[in-house]
Structure formats: C-alpha cells, structure tokens
Image (cartoon, rainbow, N blue to C red; front, top):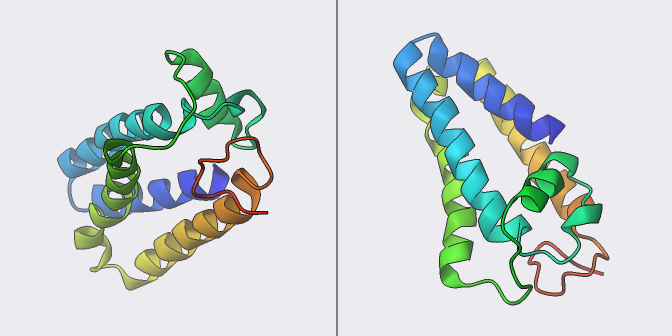
Length: 133
C-alpha cells in the first residue's frame, strides 16, 4: 500500500496547489471508493486474514463476512471505479505539473506491478483475477 498511498498523496498535493475543495473531494471520494473496493473485492477473499496488503486485509476483516465465489459484474465495476477515480480525478490538475504527473504515474504503475506480482500469487482465492501460478 506504500506506493499506492504515495501516488494518492502526490495527486492530492497536485490538486491542493490549485483547489483545496477539489483536494478535499479527492481525499473523501478516494476513501469512500477504497472502502467500496475492499468490500467488493477483498472482503470476498477467503484468505484476507493472511493478505500481503495488511491494511486492506484488516479492513476486509472488519466488514461483514462474505461468501467466496466468482466476482459479479458490479464487484468488478467497483474495482474499475476505484482505479478510475484514483487515476482520472487528479489528471486535470496534474497535467499542469508535468514532473508531478510523471511521479504520480510512476508510483501508481509501480503499485499495479507490485500488486500483480505479490498480492494474490499462490493464495487460496481461485476467483481472484490478480492470482496466477
């Protein structure tokens, strides 16, 4: 979660330089959509207690228990909305700051790469689209 949090903070900083209200919306919206992501994706994982993403695993453990199974279209849409919001919302402000935009994109891409190779690899959730053997 370190690279992800760093990318969000970079986006937040880039927005805040132009608009405190928009930065607040990004922060609050990001928290809400993150909770939706954890509920839709992580809370359904049968092994979230041993998640490599400690904060996400803990948050999933605090949510109502959900049966493991194939993810629905709505749950996959929540995942897409999460990543879409986190990346697309700050672009308007980051485009005016090319260096910060580059830092943001590198951090976010690094997060996606690390997530793919470390998050669900070899875990017990056979429905996880991040899992590979």
